[in-house]
Each structure stands twice: as C-alpha cells, then as structure tokens.
Length: 187
Image (tube, rainbow, N blue to C red; front, side):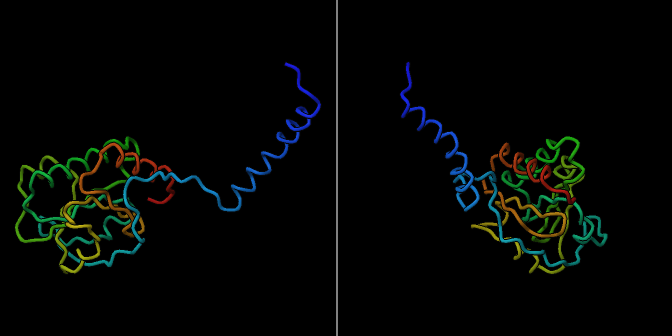
C-alpha cells in the first residue's frame, strides 16, 4: 500500500501532536472515571480518644494500637451469624497480608453489657475486645443503617478513614487493605 505525500504528512503531524495533546489533557484535569477503592472513603476524622476496659478488666485505650492499621467491628457482645462472619473476614484479611500482617490489628468495640462467648474469642486469637467508658465514642462511626453491619478501618495516626459495606466482598476488602499497606509509609 502506497502512502501519498499528504498521508505521510498527516501521519507525521499526528505522531508529534498526539503526545502533546495527551500530556495537556492529563496535566489540566482529565482523569479516568474509575476508582481503585472498594470501601467507602469517609471524611478523615481523628477518633476522640476515650478510656475503656478490655475483657480481662485491664484498662485499655486506642493509644495502645497507635501506629497500626486497625480493622474495627462495632457491635454488641452477643454475636450473631453476621457478626461472626465479619470477625472471620477481619481475621482472614489480616492473615492474607502475609509479611505485612504485623501492621494490621483487629478491634471489636463492644456496645452493650455482657461478654462475648468464650468459644468465639478462642477462634480469634489476637482480637482486641474493648468496651469504651464513654458510650458516645461509638457515635463517631458513621453507619448507613446499623454500625454492626460494617467493618471500619482506622489509620496508624488514629483517623477513621474507611467503611466497608454491610455485605462485604472479602477479596475486594483484602485488595483495599493490601493497596493501603503498599502505599503507606506509616504504620
């Protein structure tokens, strides 16, 4: 196929103009429509610190987890099937991070009186279970309908930043966590 002089000229112009046009579009605000995160990004708010007690009666504060990414479940001590599934997914998401799992902690914030079942706690070693002294602490976790339906993520600086949907897709949640750990130099 023979190219005419005019075709060669237009091709040559296109080769030089297209990169400049693409750079212009990229620099002045055009961005692809897709997004990478699965969880809902929240307005980053530092959690108001409050004292509380761990299950064994010892004082516990969120300061003990500062410097770590913290996956949080907020709910009553009486754990139904949905609660047990969330605790399981939190455990698996942490384990799935491999060598980075030491950067992630899990926290169950209790919202009522009583204690969780001992068998449930044995199934989740390393899970921090905490009851805040001030019940208003729980109000800091925004919920679509029910706080117990979500898994929240707190960054190493103590900011509440991400909320996963009530019926969480485990693979996508693990991917979000992996991307955050890879991109973050804190915690």
